[in-house]
Length: 360
Image 1 (cartoon, one colour):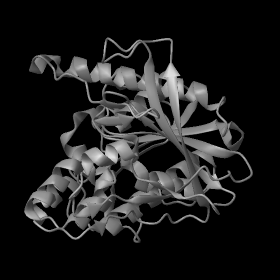
Image 2: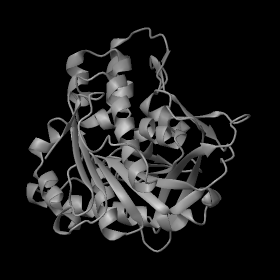
Image 3: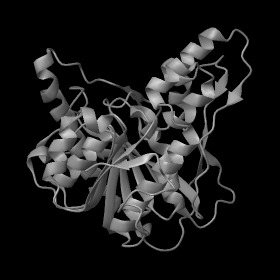
Image 4: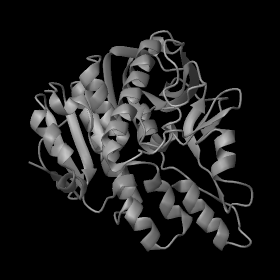
């Protein structure tokens, strides 16, 4: 999506002046470190490309840092992906994150949150929310679901592209989505298995694990919670739900957090809501749209495109307000259910956030 819109800008700008795009600064007190890891699951072949004998994944870990002195800020995407989505001649420079490469972790063991992106999107697409959580004392692990994501760059420079074939007929769509979900759940559980063996394991409290994701990533959070009790709390950001969780009784905390039209149009939310047996929350943000819950909310308004191109994607709500609301409620949920602290923000509507409605 961002690549397509950048291409529109490039085509309409004959002599561009390069303008840097930016992500909003995190609100937490902690400085942020980040590292990437290449994980290989030798127990299974790649489910989308038959010639690949092992399932390969890329993850990033975002964490509170003891110091960031001498550690440069990480780019939003890796160099090979940057060259593909923002080629030479573009009037924009892609963002730099607020995470510092390889910075030493802060003392202590911190709750862990997993992040899964939407179908076709990369692990970087939720950076605005991810690094804010890290700045408030969480370790956040973002996962690329290879060949489901549009672009995944490995340390040797290989770039894996999307390889999920569209369904052969409309009747096959649900079966395909169930396979996508199953692969993602397996990916996530493998990542969970590996966390205790990573160099940053000492900074992770793996007895306090949550998960969130946008769109299909939100369905993945629910699917992982159904399959794996290590994940104690989850959030679905505007994603339809698929898979076995719709027939189960999920007894751990879950938040459905969506755009103001999503819940009314998606019967899978009603089905899941009726099956939730733990603490449950269903919130909507007025004026938001499906990709409001990704970095597109921050970046698309900076491109100078007409409203008729931007508003269907990220809504009419202002970017700063939308992001502030999402950060506040996502953090309040994990603070309550992974740290057993926080106020009553999730209990009732707040006059500070009139855009947020609580659904029965």
